[in-house]
Image (cartoon, helix red, strand yellow):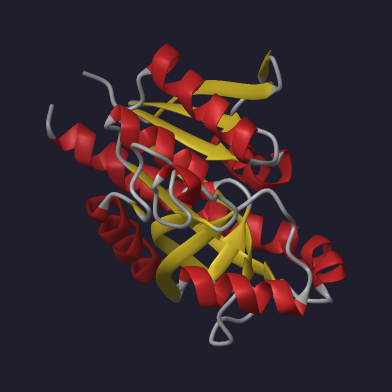
Length: 238
C-alpha cells in the first residue's frame, strides 16, 4: 500500500520551496485551504497550506485526514524564539505542543487545556528521531523542545517572557498545537519542524519577513531528504 505523507504549513511561502523542489503542480482551492498532490518516487505526497491561526490549522488538518487518510503529517514553518539559547535560523524539532491562550479553568480544566485534549500534546517520537537523523546526515544542527501556540503574533518582550514562564516552551507561533490536537484525536502520527525567524520581541515585524525565505528553503532541503529516505525504505520492501 502506497504511503501518503502530508506536508502542511500555514503560509504558502513556508512550503513553496518544497513544492518547487518536488515538482508539485498548482494547488486545488478548498475553502480557505490550498492542496497539491503528486506521486513522488513511489510515495503519495500532499502539500497543504492551511492559512494562519488555530481555526484554519484545525480545519485543514481534519480535512486532510478525512479526505486523504495520510500515513503521517509533517508541519514545516517558522516560529519566534522564546528561549535565549536559540538564534535566528536555528532548526527546532517540536517534541510537544501547548496552547498559551486557552483558559478553561472555569470548567475544571488545568490552564492551557481544552477538555478531552492533553495539556501538552506530544509529537510522534519516531518521526522526531527520524528527522533528527536526517538533519544530522545533512549537517544541519537542530534543537528540540516545546512550542506554544496562540492566535497572536508575539512581538512584545513582556508577552514573550510571560508565555515562556507559563508554558516552558522554547518557541511561539500560531498553528502547531492545533495541528497536533487534531492529529492526536485521529491517531495520526504528527511532527512539526520549525525554524527560528525572529526573537518574538520588538524586532519581530522586521526580522520575520527578512528570514522567512531563507529558513523555508532550508526546511525544504530537510523534508526532501526525509521523503527520499522514506521512498528508499518503501522501495526496499517490494
